[in-house]
Length: 312
Image (tube, rainbow, N blue to C red):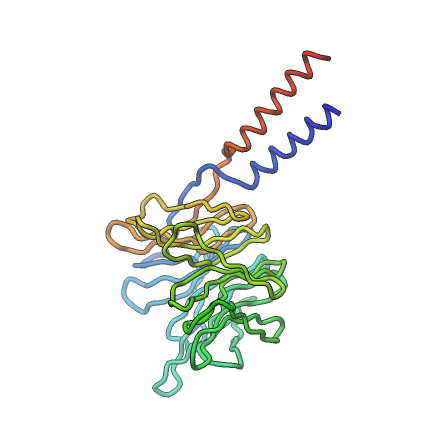
């Protein structure tokens, strides 16, 4: 029985250490000749996607970054585009802008195998696609003439995503995992942003305790959620792990730091503003340091081992 308890404690300790990090290594993401950069998502291989502003103008331009190798994503006819998320298959999504006559049109895209496919919600205009899971289900938002609405595009079948607490500004969907859980942001009756998750038609509000407002942008397959909030000391990134909120800020931040995505290894992406008010994308890679809870489990295991030795 004691050996079984010890095995259970050891497994629990390893599992906890794998899921949580006490500290992170932060790395700036700066495409060549860029002024401001944002990273919107990443997959389990560590490939990133987002957008940047070229130093000479022409903002925004979407990109993918695979271990420092940057690829520009720009559909034919586009005058600019925003990178959204990408899945573990390598498909990336976002929004691009083009002219129809003298009118600027905003529409979504999926980038797969070097080709772009246009994604446009049939119920409105201004589509943006911001998240995609490994089965190809996509989420985003569009304008219906009155407000923004989120959507789920499941193999060409569009379903509205609208938090029941949303007011006139509506709802935007930003992330979806392989379980079909959708996350995003809605604006309440006072037009303040609040985070939400949706699964099987059930909506749950996600607000950082004590925050003035909360925005949610990403979710991984473990159900860990990331976003940003405004507090009394500025704008901060956060991780929501089963209702336990942890603030994560890039150490170079001037008081603005947001998180946009998280993969299944707990690696984080986001952006911050430096002392020159330049917006810089970053990754935050977990360091292999046990949390206090893990240390407690390990200490408990050590004490039990010592007791077992004394009585055996």
